[in-house]
View 1: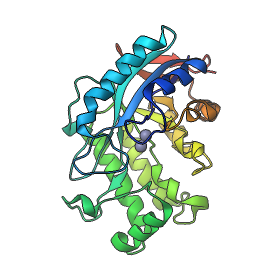
View 2: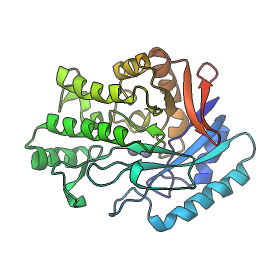
View 3: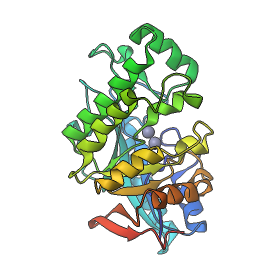
Length: 284
Ligand SMILES: [Zn+2]
Ligand SMILES: [Zn+2]
């Protein structure tokens, strides 16, 4: 059973309509497709939905559901930002959604209430490098600390189903040119998060979005992190973070292989009846 719960569309920063994404998933024999448009923020961005578009977003999913037929189940979700000191999945309510992805994109180095003091760890490399100079005195490890501290705070606050792209900050660390991902400093920062996940109901996604956009050589999270998660019985699911139809299927095998290599035999996914467990052996 092939599934994907991380799908964007033209309602946010995706390239295609909800119906096109659903048709592509059906053509590639997915059984479940979850939509996770970027939930609105109280300030303008190029990638979040506007509050007034939310009702149309729900309607578009419902219309696609009626057109797509029985083979593919469409599930309504949102990807909700956690911004430390400002907002997070725990502070917003969307009664219509079946699940949410909790994601840290922004860090808040000045612990400010102003959105102009934030920057995104997955922004363009040039912008990221410039912000590290401005806000972190050129110290990339300071940004790494802030990022994983935010992730830890989001996990503690809860209110979401799936943890988005756990080690997203490596997107702007090509060939480990900005910080070491093998240092004890980095591993300790990650392990703080991994340990916090143990015993929660949070599902960690294996996300192929970085691979699909040529930004990373591997899935989020890294292989060694997946092994640590598996040892702690933290559930996973396979997600594309699809911003275009081909993202849905192009790297699916990478995610599956990463899960199997880390020792996983099952994934846990959202459904109308809560979280359900699905075997990975019939997920090819
Ligand atoms: Zn994201
Ligand atoms: Zn996303």
